[in-house]
Length: 146
Image (cartoon, rainbow, N blue to C red; front, side, top):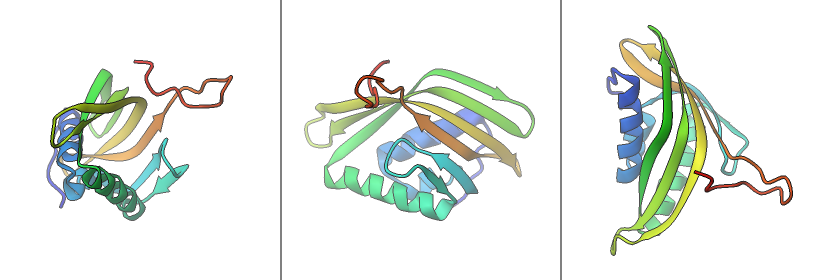
């Protein structure tokens, strides 16, 4: 399901709402078929929409099984764009809430960089990189610095 997303800000809003709704197709609609992703979770990288679809389905299925709603918040957002290419970097906070009680369960913040291109008047993510600073003493990711 490819929909026309005419602004970079609309891509981010689609990302936010698709995660909250756990809508795999809506979420994937903002990604190019040849997307290349460097992720903090599980795999070092993901090449192509098919492999990304598998990862997203596992993510959303886990949220459904746990009965969690995930709210996404973009902070420190910078968007640089020209006619056909855009670059976005920001801090992204994922806050999980119980579907039943509305209680906040947990929260993490990652650093994100998105590379986008415009095709037929619609923006698509072609590259995504999420990262965390590492505590050099423990070797563990530092999730909640923001």
